[in-house]
Length: 331
Ligand code: TRP
Image (cartoon, rainbow, N blue to C red; front, top):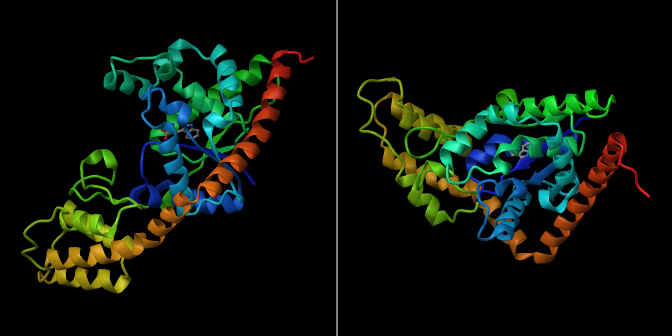
């Protein structure tokens, strides 16, 4: 059994791309490993220093993860700021993190281009905070996408450096948890690229979307004037619609439209109508659970307290030991 840590950015509602990406894997991992999943609200301040409704956003993310199947009894599901030991470890790690290596980080370079008016020290030390998230539970595996590999490499660097400096074998060397083929790429509805909420209005189907909203978005999905030759290769927008159908519809439905396409008889209007129906059916259990959980304040509060308690237990132990290793004394 591995100790797994992953952070979730509180950046809005979950869409099908999130679900078929990391989330489904989190749900299966919680059965096999000691998992800590947290909502990275400290991190969000690096880009949103004065969030309008921080608690509302965090709560919504929590509700949607619960609705999607994360089980607070099986994993430790918590809010980053509920475990301030993370901030203390961040402080210790920062003392041994070098400006040069932090400045070289790709995500930092991207961020200073995106927000030149707010190049704060939190942005520069984002990788140290992420390392603290991971090392506070002495995690050995971190399920992250390609864009986070450099951060994970820096975490290993900080971990090894700590061990070397204080002459201990304390922190492990956390490795990426590779999903391999289990990551299903979900395209968006705009014709190109993957599903994402920053890719434009109507590109993503959210788990919380109402049926009418889903229907509207699907009917507006980009198509073309149709194939002119039998068995023609599909251009990207068409391939995307077929891929979406593959994940939410019955295999017979998919093969019916495949045949229609291959014989040049396809009517995209009909295909999209069917896709919308299947999309509504697929998302229905999520939608219902999101509503039910969100309406239950006591349950949400209970989950948050439980997560805080479990995460605190593990984090407090690490901080106690780290303080001792560095040489702080408690009286
Ligand atoms: N940086 C991650 C992202 O942008 C989120 C994150 C914060 C994280 N701390 C983490 C992921 C620790 C894994 C482990 O997606």
